[in-house]
Length: 314
Image (tube, rainbow, N blue to C red; front, side, top):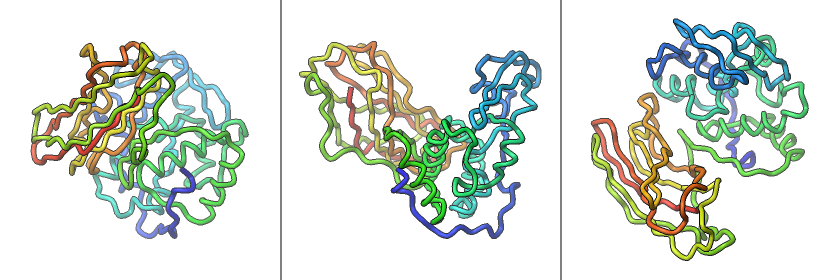
């Protein structure tokens, strides 16, 4: 993933933090993005009072290993800082795209609750200039940095690429799943993998039109000959949907017994195009063989799209 990051010269000209409208209350529940992250990342769940006041919680700042009980001692860090994103591509985005980036709750790696003065020490520096002091979390940090840059189609400069490559060489290889918002997505393997226990994968490449505003469409893959009784805890669902506004689209997976799993919800702030990603789902409660159905709906008016292909590996 590090090797695939495109290299380009950074451009800071025109940057202004106010160009990234952040800490908004996307779902209207009274808690803005900062507080949503604090609630999600608490090691002891806080009580949520009026005005989203948090009390009784506990947080671990993974950058430095410090533990806090007062939310005021924590900053919510844009893992790839706003200024760094500007330097590496977001200067060409629309206001809506920058707002979506600054409030990205769609990937837990994009925002992190960390010790305030450590975050301030990091500033807008990239891994060539700053890395967490705790050596044991550095592989996590560069993985998350690279995942965020991949998710948003951002570039790296030469020194940054070199630093990421050096740090990655000391890390254990692992599979990293990223749902891309901007830039190129992942593509399914040329030959679908066959897990131990039989043919436990399938692909449906028949195009299915996604009509405007609310009509559900579906595509089915029938799994047969898989000798394993139940599906995997890490089943993979590759989806390639062509659509001008991916935030309009919700995607569900239905098991043979009609139990459903939400792979992607709608997001009115996500104005990017297309869904080209691999989702992971715990399907271990499901029987492997049978008809699996991908269900897709466009929840907003104004445009149409189509399902290009999808692959299920259970």
